[in-house]
Image (cartoon, rainbow, N blue to C red):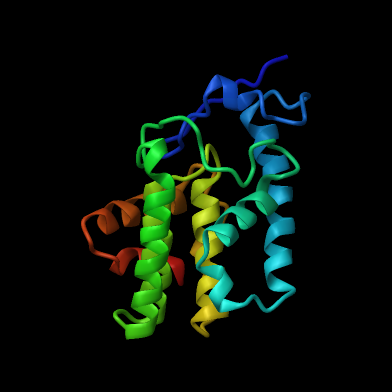
Length: 198
């Protein structure tokens, strides 16, 4: 039984060899995959909320990878590893490490120099990391959770709500979120900040 995925607007397809990394072979539909992934993601959220994370460690490549691994390690063998294929979004696979380091350095600069208010720093970080698209799957969820970790542990603000809904499912909230991402692509972060706090 193979994994048959119907992709929604804004989702990045998983390559056939990446699908081979699925550890629960009985999963055959996108609905089943979403359920299992959501359980794994909830465990990662709980892990981030049960501890005060060192702000200096959050903005490291190691933490970027560790958080993704904690979010998806019950399902994907490649959880926490940068993708090895190119996608319809994101930088070239060989540029991922360089772009992540640039983003981490930029974010440290923004914090140190108070370049933007706290919410905007975290939202910019989320937007930039999802545009890099470092992982084969789960980039949107990862970008939102790491922004939550950053804003609450390094910037002293409450977690974002991100519309208080599951943004992997189609609906008004997902449409609004994708619209806010598009505005951020044009360097207008107002809609994305407002949505993150909605």
